[in-house]
Length: 230
Image (cartoon, rainbow, N blue to C red; front, side):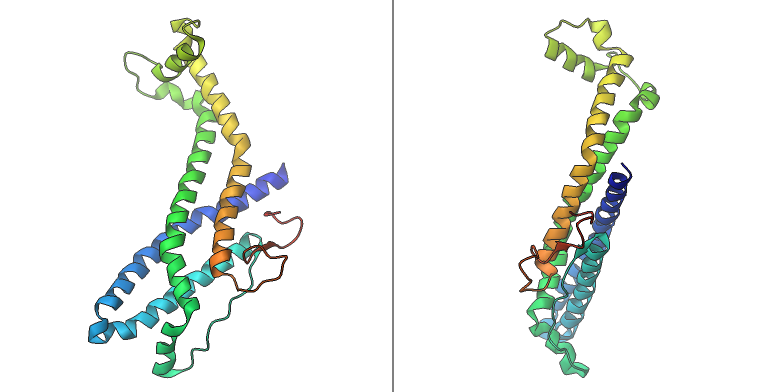
């Protein structure tokens, strides 16, 4: 139980901040890249584009560090030697690895982490809300039909065999939400593991070094048999 909670906390700590990091990267990199392309004819963009690629590389390194901190191992990719001075800065634009960093942080990471964030928050909210519904559900404003959702579901499932008064009672509604909360709570650890693994493997496939050994899956492998990703 303790190990499960530890892994669950680690998965949440990996998945949830990823959305906000990717959001910041997206709103920073996309306008800068657009500005660089739009001003390239004036040579302003020629100097701005390498800076955009370096910033994207910084976000990519942060993504690698987060995978390692979560429990995965990623081989560090090799960038081309940049050199010093103006020529060294411009040489960044000839490195495919830096373009891959920009592509991942703008077009891959952000949409993926929207999905993983929404799934993880929704799953946890349903689990917590279902378990505690009996404590706060009574304070929800009701219409003429006090509990139409659960009552309607029970009547549909039992073909009207359950009395209307019982089907629409607060006790029955609380029990239904409790069962739902228990179900989502029990499935929360494997669901979060899958979500975190999706993010980590996608990140490793895009940002890991090429030519890993056979024990590496898309640039990622567990650090030990006891690692959270095992």
